[in-house]
Amino acid sequence: MTMRKSPIIRVLAAGMIALFLAVCFSFPCGRTTRAASESRAECVVEVESRRILSGKNEDTPLPEASTTKILTAILILDDCDLDAEVTVAAEAEGVEGSSIYLRAGERYSVKDLLYGLMLRSGNDCAVALALYHSGSIEAFAAEMNEKAVLLGACDSRFVNPHGLPDRRHRTTARDLALISAYAMENETFREIVSCKYYAPRGWKNKNKMLWNYDGAVGIKTGFTLEAGRCLVTGAEREGMKLVCVVLDSPQMYERTAELLDGTYASYRMCELCGEGARFGELCAMRRFAYPLTDSERKRIRTLIERADPPPVRGGDFGGQMKIYLENNLLFSQNLYMIEK
Image (cartoon, rainbow, N blue to C red; front, side, top):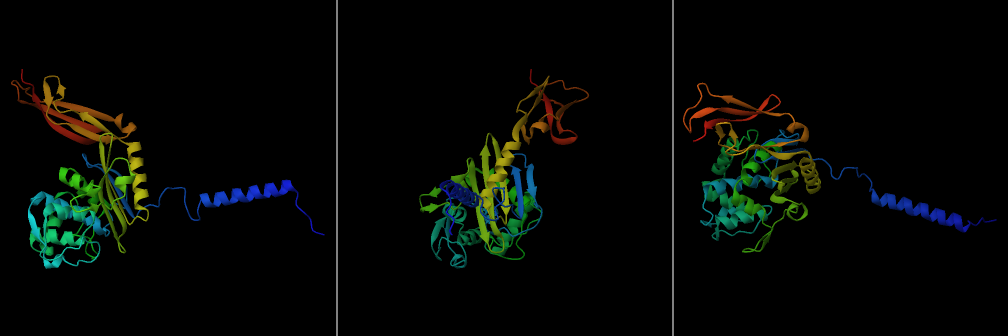
């Protein structure tokens, strides 16, 4: 004889099944409680102070794909006239990978090629600009390496202007963060990488952070099979400018947002000395600000060392001020006698 389930049992069973399905679909198989998987290497730096606020494998040399173009762009901006006309060389036509489809003999302004480089990740733009700047890819790569060292990026080696795979072409998350921090101090660079649409050529920026992250101001995406997904992001909130680098990051946008959110939650930009700040009859000439946590702010101390003999006329050297985080010297500058 077949047993029939009562209406109450059927309702309870249906409810349990619905609950089970809801749980399954809310937590897909393999998903962790974190919003995003970690990257192979990561680094967050504050632009003004260059303080490293977060890092993981930040000194490990890795391929960086098209994020290479950040250094290419800043070299061009430092050395070239934006309105200068570039005749596209034959070597720039048909470069593999992402492209704006340049043709040999065409003429573009340096400005147009920079927008094509940073918004559309044009490998052909990188070659055209490198040849215009230095005459050859090898000579331009030498300039890239020299510039990197000047910026403190000493564990990198660049052999091309676009980041296409080459076993010799490597950087670190820290080096790329320092290069990008320098680039973000250039107003024209910021204008380019923060542009969502470049109307003169009808180009849309590939970087989704500009649409999806509050405070994002660029900078550059990158991908090759060797490098994985790479992203360098500039962001500004409440007066603090950050650069976040993630290399070989399967969920590069989500992970970058996590890192930036965590850093903004933990640190604030603190002005520790204002320009023209007075210490009795002495005056400081330079402003100094530094990113600090709440607990670090309580451990800041300022030491004033007065000159002996003391100054007698306005403008005379009067001593030094030194700012410490516990016993670590963060900043020092000369003080001068105030004009009376």
